[in-house]
Length: 159
Image 1 (spheres, rainbow, N blue to C red):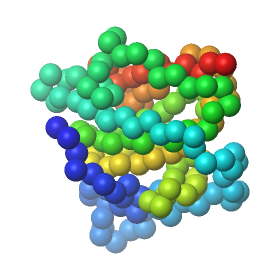
Image 2 (cartoon, one colour; image 1 turned 60 degrees about the vertical axis):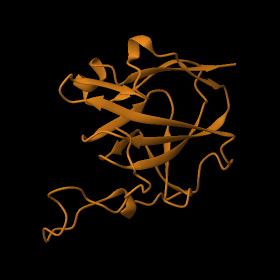
Image 3 (cartoon, rainbow, N blue to C red; image 1 turned 135 degrees about the vertical axis):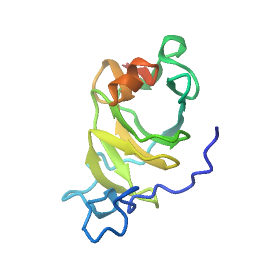
């Protein structure tokens, strides 16, 4: 399944929370108290699709389960943009260990610093990272049964 998602939908509270008479905190309402801590524009983009199959209970990045995936390689000190597209029917909280995730708004501007980026079904969201921690890091869905089923990658930050 390829998502036709073109919007980050940062203001959408999600199914069951829309128009229920309550105020819901969304990413669109969050604003950092400080400017982009790095300040540099990303030198490159990496786009990854969140993929899965409910009946087979297989989950992955770009249709490649963890056991078959090559590591994502980042150069130490590099500033880059990660674009995630959720092609599945499920929510995925995505976490990259070792570095911060600086969520961007719909215009690509720094909005707020996060540890984990929540990805509702059919969304496309982008965030910036600064590869400032050498080593091998886990990059995965925080629904651990999705991670164990393959929605995980290794990220290597190298000199």
